[in-house]
Amino acid sequence: MNTFGTRFRVSIFGESHGGGLGVVMDGVPPGIALCEADMEADLARRRSGARGTTPRKESDSPEIVSGVFEGRTTGAPLTVLFRNENTRSGDYSNLVSHPRPSHTDRVAAEKYQRFNDYRGGGHFSGRVTLGLVAAGVVAKKILEKHGVTLTAAITALGGETDPAKWNDIVEEAVRGLDSVGGIIECTAEGVPTGWGEPFFDSVESVVGHLLFSVPAVKGVEFGNGFSAAAMRGSENNDPIISADGRTSSNNAGGINGGITNGNPVVARVAVKPTPSISSEQRTWNYATGSVEPLVIKGRHDACIALRAAVVIEAAMAIGLAQFALE
Image (cartoon, rainbow, N blue to C red; front, side):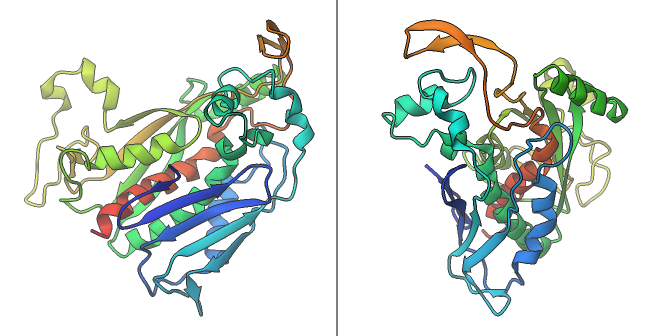
């Protein structure tokens, strides 16, 4: 479904080329100072413009249509709407019968009996993450009241961890009519001990659910994650060095047994290369019943990760806000 959460419920709606898209938040505490301008900084981080991002230009101007009165949240459902302004739907007409490899074109058509809006990926478009970013702004305001702050940043692009080489990697992908993936790390500081419920509402389960909901995310790990499988316990353990639970290392990523331990919560996500690439690919054409060349039109990111850090930060904030309000 398109709704997540218990205490802080988030429902996203809209399509990439429809009239608009947005988010409805229920369970927002009353009295939080909020206006459209509060969202601008995070929306700017998601906006295109840098080399390797889509040339599609949208103002992404948020419109708060309910849940705020005289600059404060009311406790009623909070709705934020974004209007679509710059669409070129004709770029996608050939994909109805000739779906993009590794995209949702075919599976969405099958699941929804071809009633799905295929333009720009419809409801499966990364553009729908605008709603997550807006909800993340509110979630971070909730967390700030508990002394929790979040930061997210790219740590690798195309397998390279040296930021000095990232521009060249992206440029090579752009010139080669190709795409490149990346890794984003998000850290939550100030998370108290005791958030999380065993077994099915562990912090990893709830936050991981949100992180995997972000389009293009194909892997999530907390702390040492997969690298812990190659370590010994003596290497991976985090010795406690103070009565408040502070540890000499943070290999667990701030979580033990699904419960926060008072250290920073650290998660990393793997963002796949954009499947919509401009170079020719040979793939099945349902109209002709054969494998044929496909050249994808439209305006697409060569590197989704360049704009995804703020989305990952928002998703993690929404997940942690569930525990903050319990």
